[in-house]
Amino acid sequence: MAGLPTFGSARAEGWPGDGGPESTAPCEADGCGVSAWTVGFDIVFAKPYFEGNPAFTTLESDGLSFNSISDRSFDYDFELSPRIWAHYETGEGIGARAAYWHFDQSAGSLTASPPANGFGSVAPPAFGPSNISGAGVDISSSIPGDTLTASSGLDAYTLDFEVTKRGDFGAWSLLASGGLRYARVGQNYEGTLRNAAATILGVVDYQHANQGIGPTVAIESRRWLGDAITLVAESRASLLMGDGDSRLYAGEDLDLTTPFHTFQTSSRDDLLPILEGRLGATWTSADLECGRFFARGAFEGQWWGGAGSASGEAGDLGFLGFTAGVGLVR
Image (tube, rainbow, N blue to C red; front, top):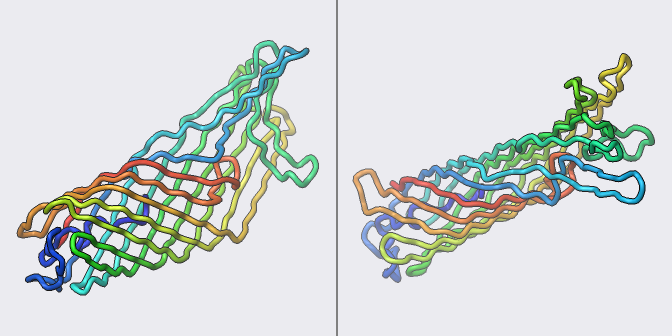
């Protein structure tokens, strides 16, 4: 998804001098060597995927010989997210490019209550330090009528600055790029336990984030189909180095005169690898006084290694979806 804004570059969009799909030596055509700017705006319609993103666990039992344990995960849907980019390219095929993409979504709240027979329970994921005895957080309940409500959010963005080099081979065009990427991904978990009178008994507020900067490289291949349509395949790899941090607040027995509060913070050096791919097509208009307009669509996929989930820092994160965009070459 993010970081692959190479549709619409000057020569790839059939800028004057490109020679079109029938040209075997485009740089010998009239007008070749003209520098050009390309700007574009995309709407990315994508859904996040997690290795595991639990909201709570429910235990049902008859108190004698039967236990049924079920885990409920947060439900994320497809969400619209913006991407903007600009690319300058000289007549020799050397250029510079910048791009920004931002995804921000909250999952809907989920609720659960212990079974009415009094033999089950409902509990959020484990929080608190696991290596210190008695320091864990427990806002679980086995009392019928209590309700646990859980919600989560995800925020991710990327910012790329690159140098590009294009090579044209008849109806084919290849674009290689390399530069720097800054990225950040943050997630949060909020859980609240209430009794039948809606009194708050316990809360969990957990947040964590990974951010880093590092090298990014990409390759794009493009094939002309006629005078206006091109097929495009792109891939990108980034290895970012930075830090990760987390913050936890939990309150237990909040309905009592002596409630118990837990605070925990952590920070660490971290790596954030990201892989991306796109497969799609672009339509480009004929020459206009202001340049050439283009529209594009593509399938997109993205993998963020070690980005975690709402309730923990372990596990990978992925995005899968579609993009639709427009832009101008001049």
